[in-house]
Image (cartoon, rainbow over the protein chains, first blue to last red):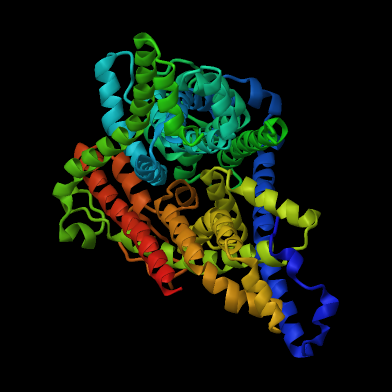
Length: 317
Length: 303
């Protein structure tokens, strides 16, 4: 809420000012309002564009087929044999990468949060927190390079080159996981730090050790914040584009095998746009149909995270 | 009591006073060590990445790498298009996103009435920050390329990045303005300043270091973003220079150039040239972040 707001005198008080200055003030206020309204225009435009370009897809193909068919090849002529429009492989690829990412990011992120909030001295925290922010600021195309040229060869040596293809969900998922560690860590740390010290003191007073206090008292008390951090991290993992476009491959596959080549929703958008599909073609519209799904999924996760924080926050005092 | 007041003191007291059995103490130490290791893993990954990039790419960094256009031969390839494109994008995005973002921040923090529409604006900005960047690419691909008729040009890319980082700048501006003591604003009003005079002459100068820092950090995010401008139609290898005033020309960008190198089949491109491009890009980002810190410190000293 605007904190400075209540001290602005009501309009009647300002009538002492010269009329010309008041007009100028008015004009400036209108301009500022317009700037603030740009964000609303952006949202409206996103929804408009996705609906406008994406729904044309469903005027030509059945929406039932979109959600139930098991192959995704929306290229060329709709009447040809190879043309299939089942989005499931893209969704499964996206979720596979997101799940692998969370398997990495949740334990590491929560451990970092607990360490930073409960153990680290101010000096150590002063080094580690900015370092995590630097990690969050690395461009994802760089992380994609890392996944393809370092992580993939490593896991292909550890397992076997036969079971892990050059482009695979595992490598992309692991690196996406590293990418979202700062999200999990910093939001969870905020939640842990917000737990009142009285709870810690009470726990120690009962004879609990520090690790017991963290696991049995602090984590439950901060659960709403931690869960919403994980959900936001999942949203970021689902929306991540460059890492999967580089390392996960371009082959939509309905599989849960992390070693196989897959394609995510975001990966398809990048691939299909690169193919320069002309506007109005079925392929072009399919990009936006996938975009609608992606937007709705991430939007739902964001809303869910907000609701969890608001509804289930443990209120102290 | 004083012993219990700091977490470290609490821990020491818990461990010592209970005269915990050795096994319990060992478990505690193990737990702490595990947490610390987990924290360091993320940083170790980052250092590995930096070391890997430097060892692969440093050999390619020569003056020709900056001045040459892309080429089919790895040894002749340069990132001129990407570099000029990214600098042009940065100038345009800064020119658009700064006034709009700061203006919106001022409105929401100082002038907005406390009503439903304002709350809707705030929730909307929070949600926009969570929209995947590739969706901003889709927005631009349809809205600016086709509906507005700009085509796959510099202005399209700049608009895509502007909309992407606008929520970040708005939030940073609001936080910086909120940190200014209300007494400054009220004092100006009491001396007869209009609300806008109080804002522009008193509040903004105090908030400016915070606003600038937030803006530069947001800009550095824009420079590193690939997906939105890739979808909005950035090109890989146009043999020309981007200039900020040539709005309706095709454009390149550093991250897009790096993506192109990674996607090529030859190892010299995929490994070494891409790494060299990454080094240049990370250097640009580092420079921006460092200048954000310097700027903030200089302003802080003046006040």
